[in-house]
Every structure is written in structure tokens, then in C-alpha cells.
Image (tube, rainbow, N blue to C red):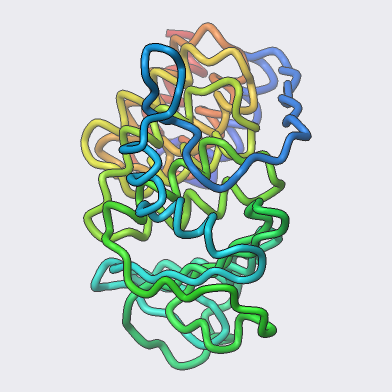
Length: 309
């Protein structure tokens, strides 16, 4: 059997994975968390208070000078600010973004179209990342990021806040991702935070991924970017979510994110989950993503399963 399996390679592995899913794991039912209908304000709700509960004058001054405070003070309309992004990030006039030949599509407010054909882009340019927020009645309702914002709004610019520090940008965008329940806005805020150069975003993204009060789409987005960008600690964190999370959709998002890690990390982790996870849906998902890897260790693993070892 070993010679036959090795000769047929990864294509057989994919077929075997389907067979193994049917025979070794039971079907799982997805559980989707319902997002709250509440619209939250686009700023941090944290505030220093006195022992009597009154907000101090120092807090008022600090918040007024913060990025969140400046956005709030600008009023309704389009609010623009810019921040440094990674040197290998380029964009075009249509809002497409490219980093290291990974095409991110157009980020067009909260109903963004992501993904696409690299042949459909304009001329790639570099520069600071621009965020365009749309505020209505003091609430952030939409958002867009890109390198060139010149045609992104239809007038009604309430304020151009200019260049902000990367620390300010990361804090504001992560707070927005942590609080908003606007459809798509949390995901877009996470993407914008990931593109902050030298932004210390990963601890907060891990927290968002594990926060059961956040919509599944936001948590899945955090897991996706952790799998794409985070360093060595990403793989054990993702394995932990796949093993411990109560929501099957989030478990499967964690397994997918694991599949995007370097093969030296992905294959051992997926193999262990496929072999030992107590969740049938995790075993099923791990088998599927293992079958996408053309690696002798994957062939050996499928042969072992078929042999019943």
C-alpha cells in the first residue's frame, strides 16, 4: 500500500481525506453567534474616574487630544487620517492593496470587495496608509483604507486629521474592532490595524479571537490574520482555540488559520488535531487541510489511518 500511495501522491491524499472524513468523523453542526444590533461609538469607552465616579479633568483633556477624541469632535461626515504602513505594501487608485505579492482586493467601506485578479489593478504606488471613516450621529458607520484616497469620498469631509502615530492608529483601530457591531466594520478595522507598521496588534487580536461576545465574523478575521502574519506564538495559540473554543465555526476558522502557517508548523499541528482532537469538526477540517499539502509526511499519515494503526 505504501508504494501505491506514494506513487499517486497528493491527489490520492485528497481523495483519501474525503473517505476518512466520512468513515472516521461524524458530521458536525455549525453554531453561529448572533451579533448584537447595538451601534457603538468609534472610540474607547474606558475612562479614568474619581472614587465618586466623576471623570477627571485630566481624563477629559487626554481624551480630547486622542485620535478617538479628535474623530468624535470632528462631527459627521468623512474623517481622514494617515499612518505608516509596511514598506512592502503598495496600493493603487482603486483601493487595491498588495503586500509581498499577496493581493488583498479593494477595501471599500464595510461592504468591501476582497480578492480579485491582479490584472485588474492600477499602477502600484507606495506611501502612508489612509483611513477614511464615515460618521453619522457620532457613530462610525463605514470605513475604507488604501494608499490613495483622492477619489474615495463624495465631498462632505468633516476633517482631515493628517498623519497620526502608528501607536495611535493601532490603538484606535483595535478598539473599534473590539466594540463595533456594524456589519463588516470590525473586520475592516482589523485589516487596517494589521497594516500598521510596527503596530503591536497581536495580543489584542488574540484577545478578540477568544472573546465570545464578539461576532463570529470578527473573531474569524482576527484568527485569519494571526495565521497570516503573527510570529512563532501564533501556532500554539491557534491550536488552543481549535481545542478549547465552544463555537464550531470559530474552531474551524482556527484550523484554517493553522493551515496557512509555514508547513513546518502547519503539518505537525494539523496531524495532531486530526488524530487526537475531541471535536469531530476539528478532525474533519484538519484532514481536509492536510490533504492540500503535497508532503510525504501527509501521505504517511493517511496510510497510517487507513491501516488502522
